Length: 275
Image (cartoon, rainbow, N blue to C red; front, side, top):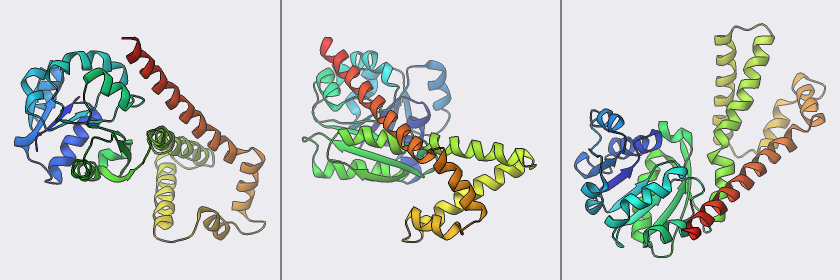
């Protein structure tokens, strides 16, 4: 199976490297299409397959084509590759907000998989939600899932609406974690720790708590009860969070992210229909 990754940015490079590192494909079967001559030149030095600058050279060779470009680049991208697509090719899109229907209409193709990975995919710890059009066969779907499993965990969702929900939770989620960590690091510095000490205290606390959660069957609420003793320090912090409605604010933030994902998807569909 020959794979073409369109876009040599962070996620495109992550996919190519993960596929090769897992030996699920070979350099001979890996291709990257990168429009920037400078970036293409840099990619060609990384031993991650053949790097192309024009779609006519690589599109006809590919069995699986992965869209790893920014959503705002879709119009120009689709126009450039449309003459070279084949209806038997499978298309995997990780472009936020770009609907399956938009890709189908723009390229006149049917086998489309839409996925939402997140940043930790760069270190093999990602979380990816994905769904597909009805024309994608079971074998093709398993093939693609095996590929994206090389970047972390995956979950198949039945409807495309769930991709927007996953965008709000796991796609944007790392930023929420970093936001909370940043506040704790600043609090630690205010309490007298050096920056390096504060970063170590917070990062190890997060890592340890997540590992502990994953290795047991206790819920978050149960773990909170185990840490917080009545009248103790943890309870004082939790009372402050509750009084300031931090829990509700976090949920509201996720809802805002979901609403924006839906809005972006509608705009993309409207733009495609208007063409």
